[in-house]
Length: 167
Image 1: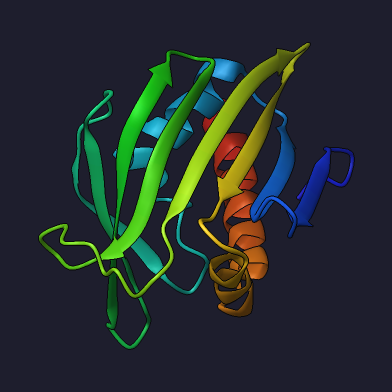
Image 2: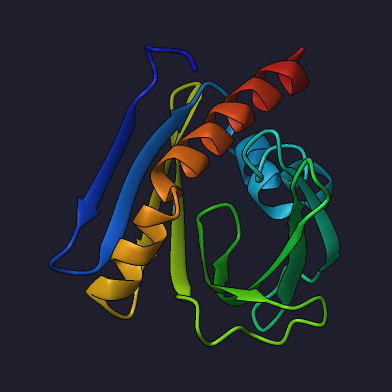
């Protein structure tokens, strides 16, 4: 990661929310595409050595992204994101959940309400990310599962991807 770029990661137990601010040295349209197009998401979303694979994506309000993360041992972890609200090149909100390969939600695992807000700042783009949970126990479970480390790695991978796409 470019150390000159803003990166804040705050766990707010009072509101059961993880708040992340991450700046990218790239144009807003490119950063937006990297978050909303499966061919780009698959290149950075899963923390290494995992791989991300999109089964289907319908990026619209009411649409769904169904994807899996595959471990080096070929263990497959399915997830889906149900898109709730989208403001093109500004923000989107979705409900993410662990599920099976058909998108049937695993109700024993926490569900995350993601809100991502994109802001152009000169030649950079700031993404304000909010990951809200239904309870403190859910928040603590995902933190225990390594959310901070995995998400940080993914954002660093996105930084590298954006750098390679700009050339």
